[in-house]
Image (cartoon, rainbow, N blue to C red; front, side):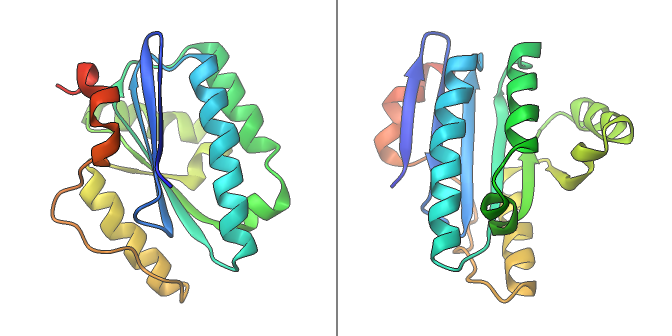
Length: 166
């Protein structure tokens, strides 16, 4: 069940075709409304996988976004901090795709100041993140997502995000 939704200044796609790797792609400006929509649906999907006895890797692609506002960053920090135990136990790893080497460096520096960020692993492409997810899941004796040469968004969401694809 891939899900997607457009908002006034951006869009979100949640792609479950590669479970147990759950992929989210953000587009444009991530508002609190978009972050909240994503957070609610994402948590429900992770909890459902946990009930099936599976562990997952979450992959968030931020390549098509502007930096989030302080309000959104606070929401994500609070959400992550207060995830139910089942969500934390189900989530084997959290990966973020950031194509810019400069921004990846900033995130690494921030992780020195905020220990919670140390658990987030950074990748420069969706393909590299999916390959690492397969390795991590294999090592944990979990099902492995199909290998991809090139990640593409689900066809049914292409029109929703077309204006942000560059």
